[in-house]
Image 1 (spheres, rainbow, N blue to C red):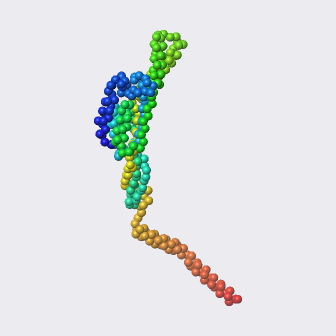
Image 2 (image 1 turned 180 degrees about the vertical axis):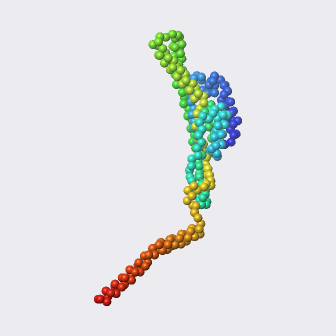
Length: 279
C-alpha cells in the first residue's frame, strides 16, 4: 500500500477540526452535528461503526499502512491480529535422508481502528483506493442523541436533589449512596457515549494471494536409509554360507547316529533274508 494518502488524510482531519459555526462548540466541535431529532449541536451524538475487507499486495505492509493512516487521522489501532493459515502442503523426497516440503499459506490480518468520526468516510475511501480489491464494505450511523439527552437530564435532576443534602440519618445513608452511585454510572455512560461519538470504530480485514514456501528438511523417520544392494547381496551370501556351516556342524555333533543307523539297517536286511529263506 502506498503512502500518498497521508497529506489527504491530514487535510481532512484539519478541515474536520475547524469550527465554522455550524459544527458545534467545545470538545465536540469535530463531531457530526446533524441529528434526525433536530437537537442542538452540542447534544447530538452520532455513533459511527464501519468495516472493510480488502485485498492487498502484502498483508504485513498493509498493517503498517493502516496503522499510519490511523495515526495521521488522530486515531489509533486498538486490536491487531495476523494469521497465516495453511491451505496446502506437498512433500517431495530429495534423497534418502532429506525431503522438500512445499507449503501454501493464506496471510490474513484483522485490525480494529478508532478514528475521529468526521474523517471515517475519508479513511474508508483512502483505504479502498490503496487496496487491490474491496471484497466488502459497511458503514453504519446510530443516532444516540436521545439516549444521551435522557441520561444527562436524569443526572442533572439527581445532582439538583442531592446537592443540598448536608447531613442524613444513618438509615438514609445507604439510600443516598445508592442514588449517588446511579448518578456516577450515568456520568460514566455519558462519557462512553461521548467517546463513541468522537471516535468511530472501523474493523479492517486484509488478505492477499497465497504465499508458497519451499523448505528442505531432514527425514526424521529414517525410512529411506538402507545399505546399497551390492552390500546387502554380499551379506546375504555370507549369511547363507554361515547357516550351511552351522548345519554341517550340527550334523557332525550327531555323528554317533550314523553308525547306529548303519547297524540297524544291516540287522534289518539280515532278518529280512532269513524270513525269505524260511518262506
